[in-house]
Length: 254
Image (cartoon, rainbow, N blue to C red):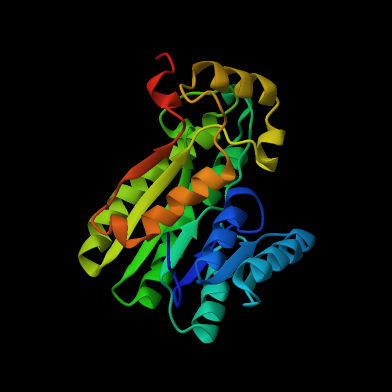
């Protein structure tokens, strides 16, 4: 369905879960793929193998760095600029955060979560846009916690709300420059990240109870939405949050 031959995509947090699914789908569609990772080199090597297989042998860029640090972002984009000379798609997918009740959150917890989940999009966009040369897509991966409340999700939910607001403001700044800035928001997705939730089983059970589709959203579902938002089919979609949730958000009480 998608032909991204000759296109170049940078995916933060691209070695696992949703990010890896996007990377593999982009590689299958012919794109040159760069993925960012923070610490786990073995996961990066596994992602490299998966991308190589999907692309038919096209070598991806593996970029180590913390997206919450401006100097790391600058270094990663310097390598992209040196090796590719341009960029078509930026997928801001890397996420982290502290899963605690609000009464237990410290300033450090708050700052860490906000820096990675919301602030990172600012410097990522700032470095990406000159490489896009007037034609590009920026997609931020969000979650339903931006508009709904979940247990132990205060810091992460607030950061995702800030992220979606930032997407709208970046759209206003960059749409006239030929850059589409949008978000893709997912409901409960059973990835490795969900294992860190102390109430994981309850979240899955409640989601299935309320969701009209009666099945969990998969990383592949979210990756398909990202692909669509990068395609020419959505060339006039700006500042939008595309929700992939099997109908959950229209059914939850409150």
